[in-house]
Image: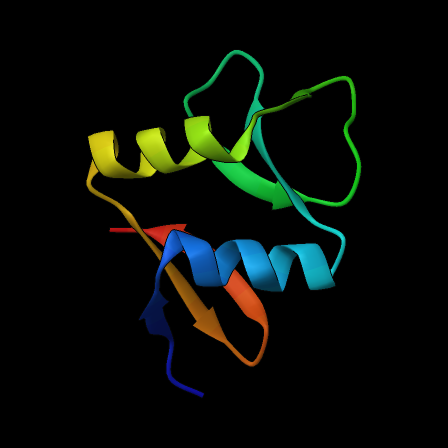
Length: 71
């Protein structure tokens, strides 16, 4: 399946349906979607997620409900 670029709004809708939230890996600049936090993850608000996406000039890609953040 091909990966397609989706908006942050669409990503949020998919994430909410799958009970995912945006998070940053502590000590890195890596952002990802996760179901629950852990010792190495810091949950971030959707507004911060969108700001990071724009600043880094990356996009959210989706295929069959699976999402990935990349250039």
